[in-house]
Image (tube, rainbow, N blue to C red; front, top):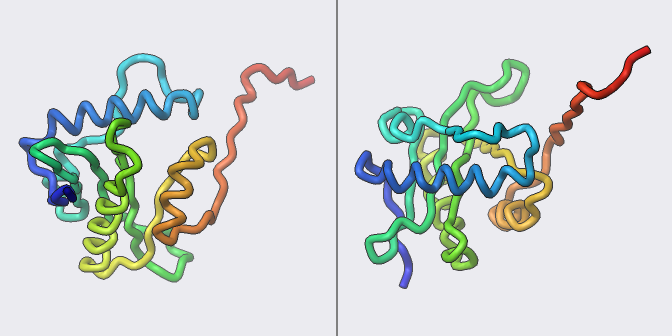
Length: 158
């Protein structure tokens, strides 16, 4: 049975806040810069209410099994396009992974972006998350720019 993909509603917020915490916990081992205490990445309600964003969920037997949002953002002035669609909050609970639910969400997000006349789509993914990278590459994403970091707190400059 295929899940139904639909726009999220404010009634979905409690489940989506749980998804957010599960996503943060999954990403903590990949990112030592994430604070250890309880944090939040998103204003989920704003994604639902804002005209420049859309949050989709996949629902199977009255259970939300996947999520993702697209947000229209101004891009840098020197690029060929003025705006980009930025994708995030791509999450499928572990017990539902491998069923193609993320692809259903991606398709809905890309269709929404195209309906808004947005053709440049970006997202961020951790280099240490090869399964997510493969999933995005299957949709057609290509690696474009590598973000590097350095903590110089322990370096001794003489």
